[in-house]
Length: 522
Image 1 (cartoon, rainbow, N blue to C red):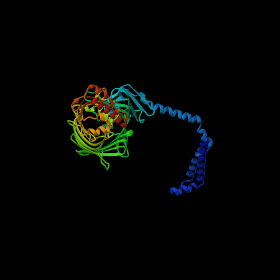
Image 2 (image 1 turned 180 degrees about the vertical axis):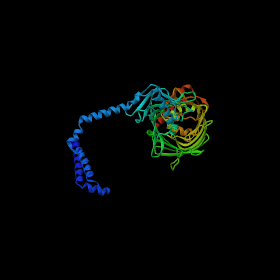
Image 3 (image 1 turned 180 degrees about the horizontal axis):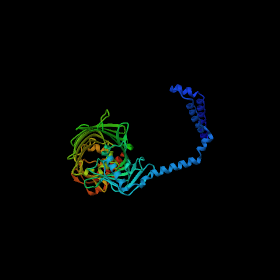
Image 4 (image 1 turned 120 degrees about the vertical axis):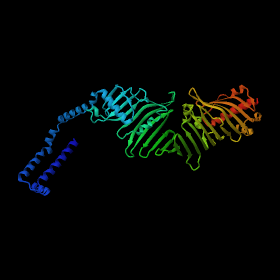
């Protein structure tokens, strides 16, 4: 009611303004404005027509023309026409509709779709078609649905409808060696008037034999056009190995530059990559942030050959890596020097490294990698120093042969005949361990071995089998000073089950070592 009175008061003010203007000598006003002379009859005609407008400013007449019934009928008719207009696609010819949509999708995404006749139409929240059991190329299984959004303009003309967006929902994408860059290539399309989204879907990465290597879950993915910077952007919220991560890709075609960002917020780990492809010799810069620690890497790529350098940006530089990768045939060689290496990621079954090794990606016979990493210290294992880690991947086999490290300055340890493999979805490491003891007395003091059990020991050898998932180790074929121990002694110290904390492990290992020495001495 207050709004109604407010509206009437405005009309009254307009009426008063009109009356004040009519009191002015109209002949004089018009002559001064247009500098012409009007006849008396013309002047009277203008006044007469102005007075006819009085009904607009009269409250009773206005309410008569704005009656509730008239307004209701008006909106009812309007809603009928709107509903009829947006319902027009229900009358489309299916074959012509599908052909038109396929042509537009081919133009916008450079993809050939196989759209089934099993579709439905909805005009809320905005006009769109939903296609079931559809596919494109060989990238998606016949599962899920494809929503195709169309412009509300020209709905009465089927041949003129315009596709404005596309949404994949609950789809399974199959990527392999031939189409692994599918999602990246989509950035080359024009998204200034077209949107693409993927929801609740999966990416199956497969090898040559079409076996699934690992699955990437897409919670939400979308392509859009950044009008401010005039570039296409890809944003995605994903999961891999049950690890959530976000990814952002930008393709600046004018500068010939690709910017990518990967965020693992739950561990404060971020990677940013700037890749320049303007020249034949392409180059890039990688920035890594982990718990406020920053590092950078530079690389040069030319004709299937990649050379890189990665280093710590802090003043007290902790590491530096250098190496190269040859893609055809694949061969990689890199080396690094560190002040301290974190071995926790090896003994945590949920770590990214363990999950990656379990994925089987390194089991390809065409993959050859040699790596040498030297570290002065190890975190969480402070007694292990001077690590010389040698990693070799060849013809589908992964080993650490030749790896050396020291137990303080008391003993030197070497790994040979090793193999890292997966068994029943558990990551297993088998190896022969050789221990050359430099100072047995200091070792006895550290483990607080009773004096009666202290015997001169120069060399120890044993077979190790360690399960990374169950955190269980078994020692077999133990040889001390070239003397094979009785199998009963082996049973007394097996299995070795690692505890939750380093302190618990130190107490636990101390007890096991003293028991083994006691059994050895007899």
